[in-house]
Image 1 (cartoon, rainbow, N blue to C red):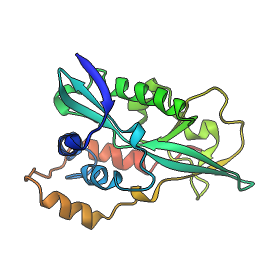
Image 2 (cartoon, rainbow, N blue to C red):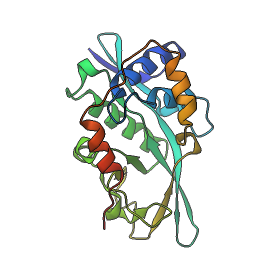
Image 3 (spheres, rainbow, N blue to C red):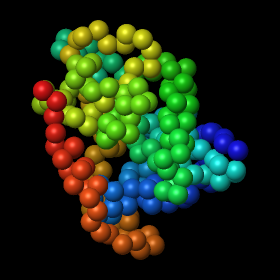
Length: 211
Protein backbone atom coordinates (compact mmCIF):
# COMPACT_ATOMS: atom_id res chain seq x y z
CA UNK A 1 0.00 0.00 0.00
CA UNK A 2 1.26 3.47 -0.96
CA UNK A 3 0.57 6.52 1.21
CA UNK A 4 1.81 10.10 0.82
CA UNK A 5 1.58 12.35 3.87
CA UNK A 6 3.32 15.31 5.49
CA UNK A 7 6.59 14.59 7.23
CA UNK A 8 6.47 14.34 11.03
CA UNK A 9 9.26 15.04 13.49
CA UNK A 10 9.50 11.31 14.15
CA UNK A 11 10.43 10.87 10.45
CA UNK A 12 13.41 13.24 10.54
CA UNK A 13 16.17 10.70 11.13
CA UNK A 14 14.69 8.20 8.68
CA UNK A 15 14.39 10.86 5.97
CA UNK A 16 17.95 12.06 6.51
CA UNK A 17 19.25 8.48 6.41
CA UNK A 18 17.39 7.78 3.15
CA UNK A 19 18.67 11.04 1.65
CA UNK A 20 22.25 10.19 2.61
CA UNK A 21 22.06 6.70 1.10
CA UNK A 22 20.35 7.94 -2.06
CA UNK A 23 22.93 10.64 -2.79
CA UNK A 24 26.17 9.25 -1.38
CA UNK A 25 28.82 9.28 -4.12
CA UNK A 26 26.25 10.19 -6.76
CA UNK A 27 27.53 13.67 -7.63
CA UNK A 28 30.75 13.82 -5.62
CA UNK A 29 32.52 11.43 -3.27
CA UNK A 30 30.22 11.50 -0.24
CA UNK A 31 27.30 13.97 -0.27
CA UNK A 32 25.83 17.01 1.46
CA UNK A 33 22.13 16.58 0.66
CA UNK A 34 21.29 15.04 4.05
CA UNK A 35 22.85 18.06 5.76
CA UNK A 36 20.72 20.35 3.60
CA UNK A 37 17.61 18.41 4.69
CA UNK A 38 18.74 18.77 8.30
CA UNK A 39 19.05 22.57 8.19
CA UNK A 40 16.28 23.30 5.70
CA UNK A 41 13.46 22.55 8.11
CA UNK A 42 14.48 25.42 10.38
CA UNK A 43 14.82 28.05 7.65
CA UNK A 44 12.25 30.78 7.07
CA UNK A 45 11.90 29.80 3.39
CA UNK A 46 10.99 26.19 4.20
CA UNK A 47 7.37 25.32 3.39
CA UNK A 48 6.17 22.72 5.90
CA UNK A 49 2.90 22.18 4.01
CA UNK A 50 4.92 20.89 1.04
CA UNK A 51 7.17 18.57 3.05
CA UNK A 52 5.99 15.07 2.12
CA UNK A 53 7.07 11.49 2.70
CA UNK A 54 5.93 8.46 0.77
CA UNK A 55 5.24 5.21 2.62
CA UNK A 56 5.26 1.69 1.22
CA UNK A 57 3.41 -0.74 3.48
CA UNK A 58 3.85 1.63 6.42
CA UNK A 59 7.56 2.24 5.88
CA UNK A 60 8.91 5.63 4.77
CA UNK A 61 10.87 5.13 1.53
CA UNK A 62 11.30 8.69 0.26
CA UNK A 63 10.53 12.38 0.61
CA UNK A 64 10.31 15.74 -1.10
CA UNK A 65 10.90 19.17 0.49
CA UNK A 66 10.22 22.66 -0.86
CA UNK A 67 11.52 26.13 -0.18
CA UNK A 68 10.43 29.50 -1.45
CA UNK A 69 12.46 31.08 -4.25
CA UNK A 70 11.92 34.17 -6.36
CA UNK A 71 11.93 35.48 -9.90
CA UNK A 72 12.56 39.12 -10.82
CA UNK A 73 11.85 40.50 -14.29
CA UNK A 74 13.73 43.31 -16.05
CA UNK A 75 11.32 45.92 -14.68
CA UNK A 76 12.01 44.77 -11.13
CA UNK A 77 8.72 42.95 -10.68
CA UNK A 78 9.08 40.13 -8.16
CA UNK A 79 7.34 36.79 -8.41
CA UNK A 80 7.43 34.23 -5.61
CA UNK A 81 8.06 30.73 -6.85
CA UNK A 82 9.16 27.33 -5.55
CA UNK A 83 12.04 24.97 -5.72
CA UNK A 84 12.34 21.48 -4.32
CA UNK A 85 15.30 19.46 -3.31
CA UNK A 86 16.49 17.14 -2.43
CA UNK A 87 13.80 14.73 -3.57
CA UNK A 88 14.82 11.15 -2.96
CA UNK A 89 13.74 7.55 -2.85
CA UNK A 90 15.59 4.81 -0.96
CA UNK A 91 18.03 3.12 -3.37
CA UNK A 92 16.27 -0.25 -3.23
CA UNK A 93 12.98 1.36 -4.33
CA UNK A 94 14.25 3.64 -7.09
CA UNK A 95 13.09 3.50 -10.73
CA UNK A 96 9.65 2.19 -9.73
CA UNK A 97 7.64 5.40 -10.09
CA UNK A 98 7.56 6.43 -6.43
CA UNK A 99 9.47 9.66 -7.02
CA UNK A 100 7.04 10.68 -9.74
CA UNK A 101 4.11 9.97 -7.41
CA UNK A 102 5.66 12.23 -4.78
CA UNK A 103 6.25 15.04 -7.26
CA UNK A 104 2.78 14.87 -8.79
CA UNK A 105 1.17 14.95 -5.35
CA UNK A 106 3.30 17.91 -4.30
CA UNK A 107 2.49 19.80 -7.53
CA UNK A 108 -1.23 19.55 -6.81
CA UNK A 109 -0.75 20.73 -3.24
CA UNK A 110 1.53 23.59 -4.32
CA UNK A 111 -1.06 24.79 -6.82
CA UNK A 112 -3.74 24.64 -4.12
CA UNK A 113 -1.53 26.91 -1.98
CA UNK A 114 -1.38 29.46 -4.80
CA UNK A 115 1.99 28.69 -6.37
CA UNK A 116 2.05 28.44 -10.17
CA UNK A 117 5.62 27.41 -11.06
CA UNK A 118 8.56 25.34 -9.85
CA UNK A 119 12.23 25.91 -10.74
CA UNK A 120 14.77 23.18 -10.07
CA UNK A 121 18.31 22.10 -10.82
CA UNK A 122 18.89 18.49 -11.80
CA UNK A 123 19.50 16.02 -14.57
CA UNK A 124 16.89 16.63 -17.31
CA UNK A 125 16.54 12.91 -17.96
CA UNK A 126 14.95 12.58 -14.50
CA UNK A 127 12.46 15.41 -14.86
CA UNK A 128 11.32 16.09 -18.43
CA UNK A 129 8.79 13.26 -18.25
CA UNK A 130 7.23 15.13 -15.31
CA UNK A 131 6.60 18.23 -17.39
CA UNK A 132 9.79 20.18 -16.71
CA UNK A 133 11.28 22.12 -19.60
CA UNK A 134 14.54 23.96 -20.17
CA UNK A 135 14.64 27.31 -18.39
CA UNK A 136 15.51 28.83 -21.77
CA UNK A 137 12.02 28.02 -23.09
CA UNK A 138 10.50 30.22 -20.38
CA UNK A 139 13.22 32.91 -20.54
CA UNK A 140 14.30 32.20 -16.95
CA UNK A 141 18.01 32.76 -16.35
CA UNK A 142 20.57 33.33 -13.61
CA UNK A 143 22.08 36.69 -12.62
CA UNK A 144 24.89 36.20 -15.12
CA UNK A 145 22.31 36.09 -17.96
CA UNK A 146 23.08 32.41 -18.52
CA UNK A 147 20.65 29.52 -18.93
CA UNK A 148 22.06 26.42 -17.19
CA UNK A 149 21.33 23.12 -18.88
CA UNK A 150 20.48 21.73 -15.45
CA UNK A 151 17.92 24.45 -14.60
CA UNK A 152 14.38 23.49 -15.48
CA UNK A 153 10.97 25.04 -15.04
CA UNK A 154 7.51 23.55 -14.66
CA UNK A 155 4.31 25.56 -14.99
CA UNK A 156 1.71 24.36 -12.50
CA UNK A 157 -0.97 26.35 -14.33
CA UNK A 158 -1.28 27.24 -18.02
CA UNK A 159 0.53 30.26 -19.49
CA UNK A 160 2.34 31.35 -16.35
CA UNK A 161 5.19 32.84 -18.37
CA UNK A 162 4.56 35.38 -21.12
CA UNK A 163 8.01 35.73 -22.69
CA UNK A 164 9.37 38.29 -20.26
CA UNK A 165 12.90 37.65 -19.04
CA UNK A 166 13.08 36.50 -15.44
CA UNK A 167 16.13 36.09 -13.21
CA UNK A 168 15.97 33.25 -10.71
CA UNK A 169 17.13 33.48 -7.09
CA UNK A 170 17.41 30.46 -4.78
CA UNK A 171 16.69 30.58 -1.09
CA UNK A 172 19.86 31.37 0.89
CA UNK A 173 19.48 28.01 2.65
CA UNK A 174 20.68 26.31 -0.53
CA UNK A 175 24.13 27.92 -0.18
CA UNK A 176 25.33 25.44 2.42
CA UNK A 177 28.74 25.45 4.03
CA UNK A 178 30.82 22.57 2.65
CA UNK A 179 32.80 22.41 5.88
CA UNK A 180 29.67 22.25 8.05
CA UNK A 181 28.21 19.56 5.77
CA UNK A 182 31.44 17.54 5.99
CA UNK A 183 31.55 17.82 9.77
CA UNK A 184 27.91 16.74 10.01
CA UNK A 185 28.56 13.74 7.77
CA UNK A 186 31.72 12.76 9.65
CA UNK A 187 29.69 12.48 12.88
CA UNK A 188 27.40 9.85 11.33
CA UNK A 189 27.96 6.16 10.71
CA UNK A 190 30.84 5.85 8.29
CA UNK A 191 30.13 5.31 4.60
CA UNK A 192 32.84 4.85 2.00
CA UNK A 193 33.51 7.89 -0.17
CA UNK A 194 34.45 6.80 -3.66
CA UNK A 195 34.41 7.74 -7.32
CA UNK A 196 31.72 6.61 -9.73
CA UNK A 197 30.95 7.70 -13.34
CA UNK A 198 27.83 9.66 -12.38
CA UNK A 199 30.16 12.23 -10.82
CA UNK A 200 31.61 13.07 -14.23
CA UNK A 201 28.12 13.28 -15.68
CA UNK A 202 27.21 15.76 -12.95
CA UNK A 203 30.40 17.76 -13.53
CA UNK A 204 29.59 18.14 -17.22
CA UNK A 205 25.89 18.94 -16.74
CA UNK A 206 26.43 21.41 -13.90
CA UNK A 207 28.86 23.43 -16.06
CA UNK A 208 26.80 23.40 -19.27
CA UNK A 209 24.57 26.17 -20.60
CA UNK A 210 21.84 26.49 -23.25
CA UNK A 211 22.41 29.12 -25.93
